[in-house]
Length: 385
Ligand code: NZQ
Ligand code: ZN
Image (cartoon, rainbow, N blue to C red; front, side, top):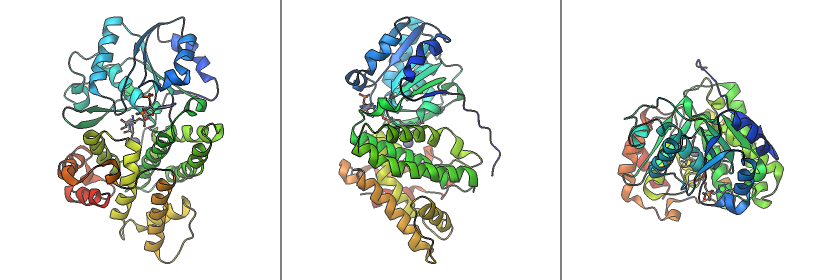
């Protein structure tokens, strides 16, 4: 187990009606709020009106229409409002895209230039506005982490920025706010959570405690996703998925581990070029990556995964057991309605080389759990066709 620092200070308000705590909590940061949201789901569900009523003692400015795979243009727009209106804090009501965009806005508000500089690292994050979140979809973990992923569709880049200043101060996690998430987004969210857990679980460092938590969280996603799909208003299922989303990426699973990921960097290239749903892309890549990296040196971990996550029986034939665990993963994604091939998104092999080059470079994939060169990534992508 490696040394680590674990400091996650987000004030989590979990459960029914917890939005009502917002006025008192937000007042500590000021009166002028930038309310951010996506393409309109919060207006349809009534959450927008509820939040506006709750915050009638505050001065509210708005940035709506934030796209899935949020664009740098929205970040620049939001930063401009923050500067002009002297905003005290940002309240993001939505999913990972709205939260990530808000995090980037929070930092860009103090940067005199194109926000893209902060994402590429050309500019430095020196300060950020406080961020509060009302989460509406269980998936990315952005509500309790320091990361934001922003896209530049002009250059086909989707890049991750991370800084302790970007950690939300407050997050309202009311599972009822996820009752309206459509089946495809619910399933994609579960694939994303599973990928966060799997990418951290398969690691060069063995660490019993975080791995045991990881196995429990994976079992939670496997148990509760079909229940949420069958009855979108199953509170218990939505609640378990929502808390899993936060725990999957708040750093607890990475404690003592090396935290070098693979599939996410490959998927980010797919989103950057084809603007696909992040979790659905991961559902295609993850089982193929697993199959590709299965070897004498990884087989024992895959056996633990098969036994402790999928409940399979230990057997003498390790490779058979490991492959069964991967089969179960693949079948689970199909069962919850996710694609298993890139061709289902209309993606062919024309950009494989360029995407592989960027994924290896951006994700430092040569240092991953199983190091990947460009030709390995191309091979994995070919398996996904
Ligand atoms: O935009 P609206 O109208 O709100 O609709 C959204 C969107 O169409 C809809 N939705 C969300 N909550 C809903 C709802 N529809 C009905 N009822 C609700 N309650 O779902 C769609 C997807 O929303 P989005 O915010 O894009 O989804 P998600 O939370 O999956 O975020 C994806 C983004 O987060 C990044 C991804 O790459 C992608 O850009 N990630 C961020 C991470 C982080 N910050 O740590 C880590 C992740 O690995 C990931 O890369
Ligand atoms: Zn993800």
